[in-house]
Length: 404
Ligand SMILES: *Cc1c(COP(=O)(O)O)cnc(C)c1O
Image (cartoon, rainbow, N blue to C red):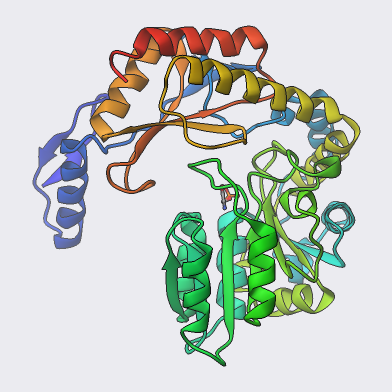
């Protein structure tokens, strides 16, 4: 039985002669039955936090463009100008795709995050897979918070190392897991700001733990870079930690920086080793040089315009105060990610639909992205929002409370 999506929201089963496709179709069909089917919507246009779907403007609280840099005029101009003579890099970095724009961005990122060197990857997914697959081998131990991003999990699986996952933020469990195999090479990987919960890992404690247990700490700062720390240099800087404490820093350019791509920053030895051995770096086309230039300009905007971070912080405060007053099921998050935990996939979908009727778009995050029974509205705030926008969201949430 194959599922044919002929019209939005319609799944039509029909038969095919391929066991593999049949099995996949059955899984897809099953997913739709339990409110877990997902469908991309076409955003016709965007304007600040507003998204146009099928001719209707909705106020969006779902993007990771926390500082509004994806729509920043200087970043757009940088991309345009750099694309004047070529679009694609036309090759991997190590062949002939490494352009002046990439080299300058790597230098900027290393200097900004206070590290010796940085290495660009085409996406964050590829960066995490590359790091874990390169550093770890069979017989090693990889310890991770249970709520880390899927690509850290996939990277550990690909590496062949033994994977242990500790309950969210449970330092004592992490310690026990690191101690479970004395003498083995161990790496502890964590998100700095958790992507679906918005809360933060205790980086200082984790760094101390890793030093004690002689494990290597890797931090994924996809949601902290640009937003936290002096000059927006990220969660590690915000925690007062340096390269020695957190030898492996990974972050993406697709969230607060508003571009696309990712990087790993650390010692010369780490970066040179990744450049030689990371398969997801070596065997793929380098990111378009114009994007690298846009990201470099985005970094300069982040550093030069602290008001974006400050505005975001004040909107977060305003939202949390309002949501608490309404008695909404807020999670303990201080970041731009403000989930409302609703539990079931069905309730989450219903709430998202109700909000949409009020002209608002928020993410309905369901399993397997989050654990079963922990479905949620993932509300994200951005410096693009105004106080009026946040109040509008709160008013709509108050009206939808019956459904939530
Ligand atoms: C988004 C994200 C990634 C993946 O980055 P992409 O560049 O989108 O592939 C990795 N880690 C975390 C924590 C993320 O939120």
